Length: 176
Image 1 (cartoon, rainbow, N blue to C red):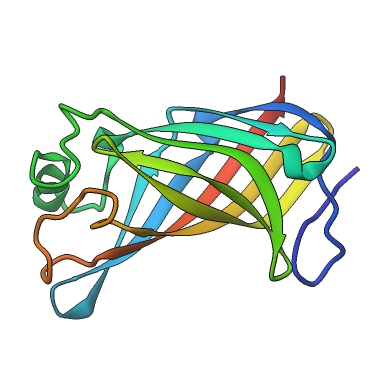
Image 2: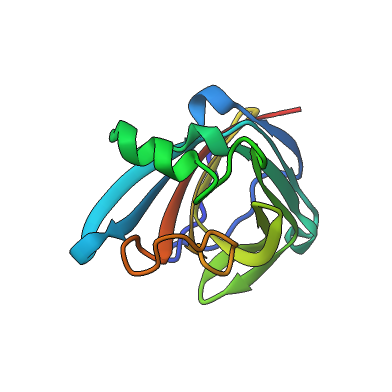
């Protein structure tokens, strides 16, 4: 059975249960800007994560750990700078975390509302679920979020590095 959640289709939730995210098949990519508005594309790895689909769906929950040191843009000098104390401070704050304890329907999409913690600073963030497919014991989610790095405590290089990151989550999980 395949279940799809999209704005064009009826919103149908995956089967209730707990799903463990497979870090090898999941990731978080991002787009931001650099000096003169030039685009910067990169990726974070997923450390550990779990999704609990509730019944009703509004009672769903999720948590994820993203290793700050996994920040990668294919530019070693930039990557080292962003992992340093000026930006992510990956040595002092090795984990970026997300925790959500509810899902709402907003503008035709399911939205996981939660808290993102970066460098010890926690801020609310909405993760917009673009697609959800359940097949057998597997769950595949694609979602997006917009992060304000300054409000998240990453304040270095204002004006030189983009303030906002657009995240694209590609998640594969297996029923626990």
